[in-house]
Amino acid sequence: MLADELNLKRETVRKILTDDLSMKKLCAKMVPKNLSVEQKHERMSISQDCLEQVEADPTLLDRVITGDESWYFQWLSPGAARPKKARMSKSKMKTMMICFFDSKGIVHKEFVPPEQTVNQHFYQKVLDRLRKRVIRVRPEIAKTWILHHDNAPCHRAFSVSRFLTSKNIAVLPQAPYSPDMSPCDFFLFPQTKLAVKRTHFESITDIQNAVTRVLQDIPVEAFQKCYESWKKRWNQCIVVGGEYFEGEHIDVS
Image (cartoon, rainbow, N blue to C red; front, side, top):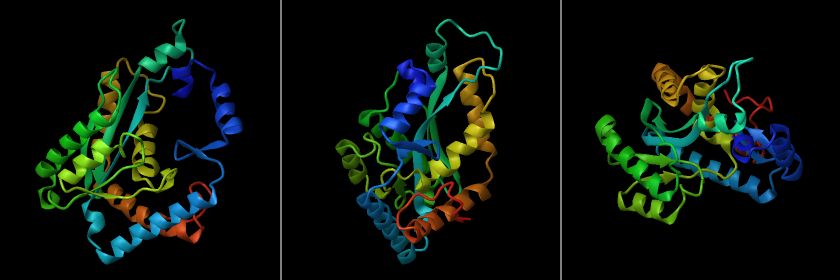
C-alpha cells in the first residue's frame, strides 16, 4: 500500500522501513524491530490489566466488541495487461473496510466511501452507527458493551473519547505496537484477506461483495476460538516479558 501511495518501488519502501526506520512486519502491520524497555513494560502492564478485569468479571469478554479498519486490494493476474501508470491504477482499485465483531460474530461492518479519510469526525459517526447496531443485534449487552480498538490517532482523539463517555461506552485498553494482541490483526483481517488473495475483481463493488461473503461464512466457533486465544495472548505476553511472540513458535493455542 505504501509503495502504491508513494509511487515508489516496493523494495525501496521495504529498505526504508526495515533498514532506516528499524521496523518489521507483525500480523501484517509494521512495528519496531526491537521494543524498548518501556514498550515491553506497557505491553505487560496492559495485558495484566486486561487479565485482572476478566478474572474479576468472567463475563467481561462476552461484552467486548473489537474493531479496526483495513485495506482490501485488487489483484492483477500474472500476464495481465497493466496500465502505463500501474501503481496509481492499483491504488485506485482498493477499498477500506471498518469491521467490528465479538465472540458471537460480526456486529457491524462498513466500507469507507472513496476519497473519504478516516479521521476523528468520520470515526465518531462510525461508532454511532455501531452503537445503534448493537442495540438491534446485541440487545442483551446494549447498555453494558465494551469497545476495543487500537491506538490509531482517530481512535484516541479527544472528540471520540468524549463521544464514548457521553454514551457510557467503556474501552478495553490496547497496548501500542501490539497487533499480536489485537483480534482484527491476528484473526479477522488475515483470514478474510487470505480468502480473496490472488482473486481478480472487475470493480471495487466486487471486492466488497467478496469480502462480505467471506465474513458471512466465518463460523461462530471461529470467533469464540479467537477470543479464547486473545486471553491466552495476554498471558503469553507476560510470560515472555513483553516481547513479541507472533511467529516466534511460542504456543498460544
